[in-house]
Length: 235
Image (cartoon, rainbow, N blue to C red; front, top):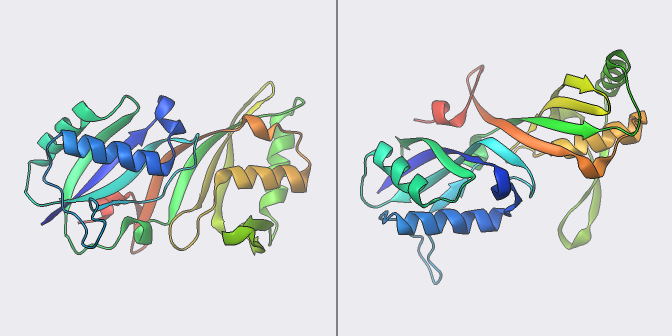
């Protein structure tokens, strides 16, 4: 049995796929490419495919990861080419490599994700004004958010520690582009949309939250004191 780690993109119309739909798309492509898949045991066997950090519907990305277990070894470049021939436009395998079958799950090793978030304001802001507002927001020791869990149970959590970075990339007319890094994976998972929502709520920024556009740039894990992307950190 072998395990392949894949870096892929999810863009254009494919960003509107749910995570479950994405799984089905990848499974169908693997079958059409005639890959000898490894299946789980039990009454309902399914291909052993694992994803790093599922995206919300409507979020595009150029830094997604998955692992797939196979029964027969195939050249990694051939694997990539075969799959890209079967995948729909908007999903593309951009790098593949074999990893140890005993490696930890992707969800357990990823730690952060970096996003670009495009926002539309309801009035004009100057760069210095937004910069001061953002600085004040990030100086808060606590930022509380009401999280809805299973059975619609609401609990209040402090998300401040999960906001790793937030900077302004550009500001023009009524458009602001932020670069935001947040916790991702089993140790914490914070959507950048929530960061913007709390910025609006706590600092009074006049922003249209319905028009947010979010794009994930990359997902990171760490090795010692170095931050690496999964395709480089896992062997």
